[in-house]
Length: 434
Image 1 (cartoon, rainbow, N blue to C red):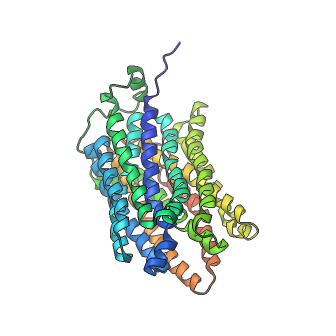
Image 2: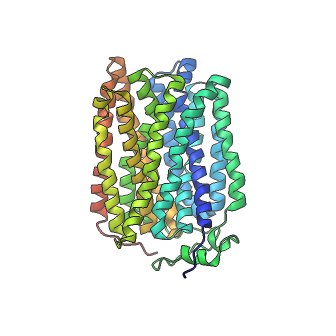
Image 3: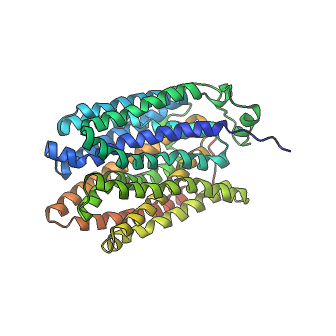
């Protein structure tokens, strides 16, 4: 009977799941406190959009440098310092006053939170063979849904009970619990004493991977310009540029949509928002499971990944009917948005994994950071060119439902466009040799 490889790698997966949950919890708090902050600081939609844009610009810059830094420091210390800084930044929201103050702390949060996904993707590349990476990515990426679920179920109640400032303090402090667990349980596979030899061999079982991550730190051996010379980098970056803004739209504007369209306020928003992200959690995990299922049925890695992403891109399209069906019943809109968010998370689990499919482990953090930066830039542009003008204009003439109608059409077409461009840039899998 063949020896079972062991399961310690899933302990590591649970740690990055926890970190991603905290990451999204901290960034989602402000959208749920928008009514409180609007009342206290006399904000309009433009002010809120400016605060959101400050976060996204900082996040874009942070992603570029965070991936590089994590490749240099290694996942253990790179992830640790990133989480430490973003937890401090999240708590500091409690001391902000006015648009400028929130712009500063949101920028600090954006810079520091940028380390999460480059570190998480690099951790998955170090700890999982290729056929399991999409599943592991889908599981840890579902933490973004859990964070978005926990936020509406807790933040409005914290704000009502203790005030909006304590809502920031309490949610931000959760990250310090993760820091203790990370230092205790994490080490790279080659140095992890809790890892069996059988499981280590299983982790390193891909025959085409020659650069084992045996060092804690190390200087990346490819410059940004070198990485940008590969079509594979541009395929990943374009996919992120077109689809990341859609997730940001859900995260920052879903509470406002429910409030403006259906008159929900305060704690009444909690259940529908939580339902959207509960549905999306299913997509995140299944999105990683489907390509593994196809690979186990003798599909090639690249074919399984690409077909799965096409299915998820098509699954987003029904969101164009959210406004129409939502006019009949609010819960129909909530379910359709939830299905679209679920398809996004399934897409996300696979597009992240394409990096470790195409690049050696030593530059996974850097490439993930570059693509993430493009995704965040896309989010900034969407906020500046579409959301800020669109929502302010249509709210002023009391036709805010038209603005959401337009945005749902943008959401419905973004993934198919991204898939077509990625297919054109990388029609066949050709791993990069460095």
